[in-house]
Every structure is written in structure tokens, then in C-alpha cells.
Length: 481
Ligand SMILES: [Zn+2]
Figure (cartoon, rainbow, N blue to C red):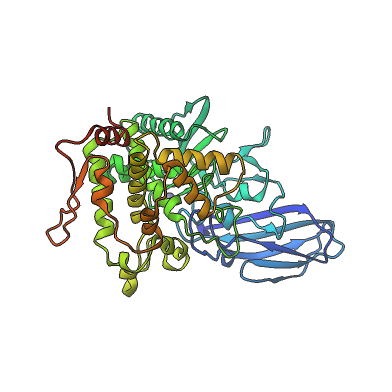
């Protein structure tokens, strides 16, 4: 990081050459978790590749994100290049005189076809910067040096450096959880860490397993957005934001990013790993990966004692209103919104086409609610969506180490429910209007679905005299006493 004022990183790479006459270097074109092509390769500048005798090798650009280097007879390779940065954003690297944020997909090239190659990364922080935050394992005895067993792990492990602040770490089941950030601002640090600890405890209790050896919350500074990783998350964060967005708004966001290490990183659609770093990985199931992650935010917080019953009901009221007040629901299904996010954008199309799309962040949690209540009703409250999440985790991530297909997801849900759920799946694959009254009724809830009145419809209220089963479903669903 010799030139932070120019926002430019400098990278050197050394590795053993293969046998071919030509070696293709590549940089991913996207960051898994942010489903947009980013053209990271366009930020690469001044690429020089040399052999073991310091002879410069010829190279030509090869495709949108590749470089073909002439390597006949070469034994080892050394590459150097600059990475220009311009945007402070969770999916892009950024360097200035106060901090450096590295999204490895935009920084470290790999040799085509050799994603399984292990790597060691040494960060040389600018000036007096004394800390690096990352989920990577450090190499003993070497400062700021980290090891990745393959490029999938390297690309999943962002790094932050600067004059950072680390809050007091906590352990859950003996596993350390750290929170390190840049420009954290003014807020109650003890309270934040205490709340995050409860969120980690309730999330991991829900799935029943903690699959990592350590976890790091990496706060990259003020802004919007976060990205989930296997044993870390990068979140936009500042104390001021915490105050303006509201304490619980920020906690919901942190819960979301944390719960993703289960739902999408491990409990995942079959298309989302291994990733296609060139073209992007398209799936119909972001309503599961994003939508159900949003669905679980308030439920986990409620279980952690961080949210009241009325706040919970108000949140679902708002989510239903967000879906039902947008005409896009007549044009695009949830499955389509998932698959088309690559062209529509993360929250649907904008401009003239804004009314033709929906957001899986909005309709996803709403159908999650209906599925959960239906499973509880069909099983006399013996099973719930939690059982589906645990079964997907056990059957696919633990036993098969792969994602699930749409058919496998459906058969898992219907096996837990003990019945076909055709109507609910029509809310995924068609634009059929959800029968809110029926499904909320299972939990003894009523909903005002009149849409031709003033703002304030979709109010959710508790029925005056629910049956024993309705009362029991509501109590366990809402994590009440
Ligand atoms: Zn998310």
C-alpha cells in the first residue's frame, strides 16, 4: 500500500509454473453474495510477469477477466500489478490514507483451472497501521501473514487494515467471536457485544452446530450493505448510523449477515458453490437464501430477548405491506426475481420498469412466514421451518457437502410438513396472491387485507379467543413465554 493517496494497491505474486506454453491468469468477475458482475479486471494496471531469471514474459488480455502469459519452459513465475480503487463499498476494495479494505476477488489473481491451489498472503500495511482483520488463519511467526487452503477460501475472506479498533471478544461454546472495525464512532460498546453474543447463541442453537473455529465481524466504516462469508462478515457500520438507523435496525442487519453463514454459505442452493467466477451463479432460490434470512432476523432477535411481541408483528405487517403495495407482484414471480437479479439489480429494476419487478428481500420473508405457520399447523406444532433449516444443513451441507436442488428443497419441506404444499409453492412459481388470512389464522392472528383504504392496512392482530392449537402455534412461533 505504498500509494494510499492514489487509492492504489500494489500486488506481487510468486508461484510455481505449470508445464504449458501458456499460462492464463484470471480475476473473478463478481463477489459471491453480491449478485452483480463487477468487471474487477478493469482496475488492474501495469501488469508485469517474469520468469525465474527475471525475464519479462509476453502476455495478452484473454477475455474480459483473463491474461494469457507465454510461459514455455518457465519454472516459476513472478507477477506484479497495481489495483486501482475508487469506491467505498462492501463489494469493492478501497484504499486511502486511513484504511485499506481488500475484497480478495478484486485483488488476487489465480491461475485458470487451479482454484484448488493453496496460498499464503502477506499484507504490508501502510505507515503505522497496526492491525489486520480477516477470517483467514494467520501463519505463526510471520506478521500479517495468512494462509488459505484454496482460492475459494481466499476469495471468501476479506481483509481490513488501518488503525482499527477491536471490541471485547466473546466465546460461544468455546469458539471466539471478534468485532474489529474502522471509525466505529460513539455508541455503547459493551451493550453491542452483549447483544451480538445473544444473537450468535440463538442462531447457533437454532441450527444446532457451530461449523467454524473463529468468527470475525469486520466493520468497514460508514455506508450501506454487508456481505456474508464462511467465518466472517463485512458490514458497513458506524456509531452514528447505529443511532440514526435505530439500535434494533442495526442489530437486525448484523443478525442477517451472521445468519447467512448458515443460510446461503452452508445451507445453499446447488448453484451457489462451487461458484462460476466468470459468469456469475444464477439460482431460482434467492428467496430462500436472502428471503428466509430476512425472515429469521426478528425471530432470532425475539428469541434473544431483544425484540418485543408488538415490534415483531409490526415488522411482518410492514413486510406484507411492502409486497402488497407494489404492482410488480402481478408481473414477476419470486423464482424469476431470484434468477433475474443479475440483470434487474439486487432490489429489482428501477426507472420505467420499477413496477414490473419484485424484491426477494420483501416477498421472501413473507412466504417464509406462511411456510412456517403452515408446517406448524399441519404437524400440530410439532415441526416448523426451523426443522427444515436443520434438515437442509444436515442432509446437504454435513452429509453431502453440496447445495440442494429446487426439487430437493421442496421434498424436504413437504416431508417435514407431512403433506404436499402446492398452494404455498404457487407463491414462489406464480404470481398468485397469498391467502394471508388463512395462514396467519393458523397462529390465531387476523390481518386486515383491505387495500382500498388509507395507509395502515395489513394490521396484524391477535384473535380474541384462539383455540389451544392456535395459541400454542403463536407462542412457539413468536418465541413468547
Ligand atoms: Zn443477505
